[in-house]
Length: 221
Image (cartoon, rainbow, N blue to C red):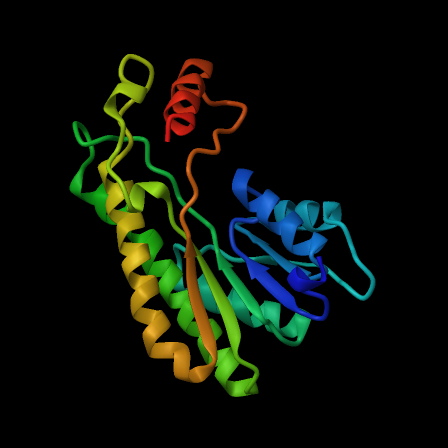
């Protein structure tokens, strides 16, 4: 575990009160990091931060940050700096979802979904400025998806739920390519940029039949 230790490091994670965000925040805390939990509402951020394990020397913080709004990104990051002093790791996890598939999605909805990627970029750039200004380097983790790498599985959704949204696939593919681009440009600054592309992680509210289909699809690969 010492090889994975984050003791003495501070990590900022967006969307930390959500299904995946909570698990990521807990993992960071279990590795010894101080975690800046961000959410669209302070109450959710504070509740999540209070539940995180605290290894010796770690302190967790809560900030309001909506990655879909540029002004909120700037305010939230500034507040994180004020509370934590320094930020070593940024996890771009926040996501505003979209239910409409290719049959019904509007131009406005499609553009709004892609704006998730804009938020990832703006926050990553703000983090890079912070890292360069303090001369300490840093690590950025973008949360992508297997659907940024492969096509969807129509048979998994048929008769149960709408198709996996085409705008979501376009977004996640774009995040993967943005990761490559920023990684090569920011390497000289000591800022690493990586992307995690997880498979399905359905919440308790997901239709059981869909979960079973996704399980079969995952286990067959």
